[in-house]
Amino acid sequence: MTRVLLLGGTGDALAIARALPTTHVYSLAGLGRVPGDLACTVRVGGFGGIDGLVRYLRDEHITLVVDATHPYAAQMSRHAFDACALADVPLWAVRRPAWQPQAGDDWREASDWREIVECIAPFHRPLFTLGREALAHLHDIPASQHWTIRCLDAHPGNARASIVDARGPFDLAGERALFDAARIDVVVSKNSGGRATEAKLAVARERGIAVVMLTRPALPDADRIFDDAASARDALQHWLTRP
Ligand code: NAP
Image (cartoon, rainbow, N blue to C red; front, side, top):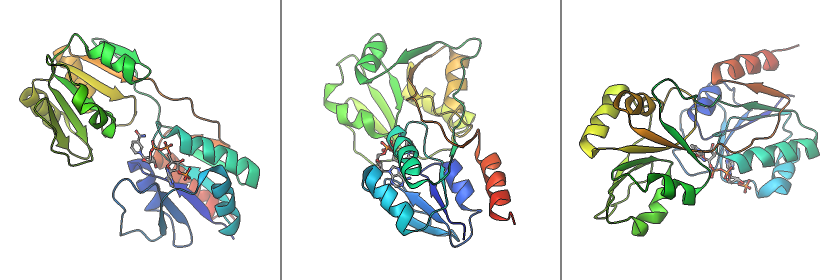
């Protein structure tokens, strides 16, 4: 019997999960929404590191792991790589290509929070789109700045920070309106790749606004690597229906 473990938490993973029949498993860390309308089994929560994942693969008779986690969820991807090697289970991965700077872009690279703070020091109205990380620094905001933080967490913010609790995809019109309303003069972003959240980069480009891009983590290899959900889903359909 074939049994797939799909590691998710992204729109790509959800698109693949929608095509998975009932015996297969879609796994989420438990930080976001848990879909209630999938045919496949949904499990929520960590496995307990590499050893826990090896145990899970063996106990649940998993015959293929598909890593469709976010490109910055590097720990889960590394654990999947190590556990699959130990349990002798093949590993496929969806690795969204990074966005590339285009003519007119002013991108600056930062490899950690300290470098982000240095990069935004000359600006006054940053838009953070890193997830919840900026929330941990609400009390460190310099008097010269007002931060707009877009993340999935509802949070009151404070006098120097407004929290926009919103989930992508985001379109050009919506991003232009946000940049206007919040008077954004610099964007802080992960280089997530894909279409769902790239409109902010187009708005930054058309307005000559700098983008501070957090360096992508190195990700492990896999037996097969797909650029997008559609090609992974097609290969998976083929694999599941092979004689
Ligand atoms: P991470 O640092 O790579 O993983 C931390 C731990 O969370 C893992 O060691 C694992 O716990 C557990 N975990 C992560 N993904 C899991 C999954 N799909 N199923 C079961 N357990 C999982 O990940 P993260 O950056 O905190 O991201 C957490 C989740 O949010 C990921 O699934 C990712 O796809 C999604 N996400 C992340 C980002 C981002 O920017 N990082 C953005 C959008 C969505 P154990 O060691 O106990 O197994």
